[in-house]
Image 1 (cartoon, rainbow, N blue to C red):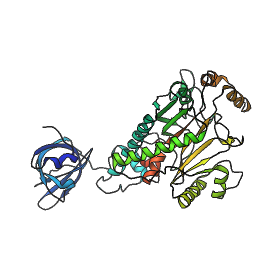
Image 2: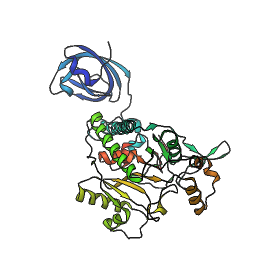
Image 3: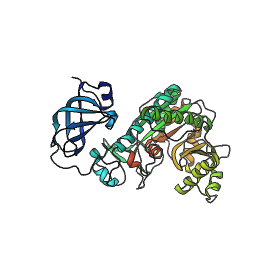
Image 4: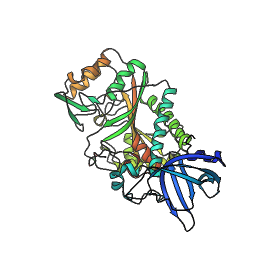
Length: 414
C-alpha cells in the first residue's frame, strides 16, 4: 500500500490507506484518544479507543480507514488504526509544537532549531522563502537571464577591505565572498544577462534584528542598458512575479508591488526624512520615515531612493551627471532597505582612474579588470537580501525568524 499525504485523504473516503509522520499532539479524553499526525502537507486526525502511549514527536506509520468528519482537519479522520512506531521519543520535548505559536523566545528556538523549524509557522516562513527564490528564477529566465554559480572563496575583498572573513587558502590569504559582484559583471560579457542565488558573507560586527553574517543574496546583472533606470524597471517586473509566485505556491498574499514604484532622489529623501543635508547615508530611522511617506503619498509599500553619494558607493559604481552622486539606488520595502543596485562603470580606463584616486593597486583586481580591458557594454544590476525581504513580507520582527540556521555575531551553531 503506497503512502499518501494528509492533503490527499479526502480523496480516499471509505478506503484503507497508509500515512506516516510525526505525532504532533496527543489528546486523551475519557472514551477516546485523538492523535494529530503531521507530515509535509499538513495534519491528519487519528481516532483511537485507548491510549497509544506514544510521546509527541515520535515518528509513526499508520494504516487506517478514511472516515468523513466535518470537525476533523480536511473533513476526514482515520479510524481503526494499526500503528507502527518508527522512532519513539523517550523524553519530553523542550517545548510544545502543537501550540498556535511557539511559547519560547527566539534564542531557545535557535538553540533547538531542528525542533523549532517543525512548527507550522516557522516552516511556513521557509516555504515562502522557497517560493520567493522560485519566482526570482522564473521571471529572470523569462527575461533571458542565465543562472550562474560563482566562487565563494576569493582573493580580494569585493566591497571594501573591511568586514570580510579571512581564511588560510593553502598558505596564502583568501576571503569569503561579500558578494558575487565581480563575477556577475564578468559574466555579462558572456551571456549579457545573468543571475545567481547563493550565500554571501559579511563580517559586520552588527548584532541587530536585520543583520546576518551569512545570508542569501538574489543577484542579477544585465548588459546594454542606458542607465540605472533600466535596471529599476527590470527589478520592479521581477518583484511583481516573485510576489505573485509566493501566492500561487503558498496561498500567502504579500503586499502589492506597484507597476511603477515611486522614486525619490537621495537629496530629496534627506528632506523627507528630516535628516541633515550633508548626511552621507540613510539611517534606519530615515528609511522608516521614507517608508511612511511612500505609503501616505503614493499608497506604496515600496520606494526607490536614487542618486546616493559616490563616496558611500563601491568603486565600480557609475556616477550620475552630477559627479558627486551616483547612478546607484536602494529599494526600501516597508521602511527597510532590501535591495541595493545601480549602473556600473564599464570602461577599463575608468576603473584604472578610480582605483588610482583611491590609492588601490591594480594587481589584486587584475582578473576582474581584464573583463573591461577586453570590452564590456554599459551594464548594471541588483542584489536582494532574501532573509530581509521575507521577514518584511511576513511581518517578522527579526530576520532569524525566517532563517533556518542563522549565522550572526553570536551564533555559529547549530
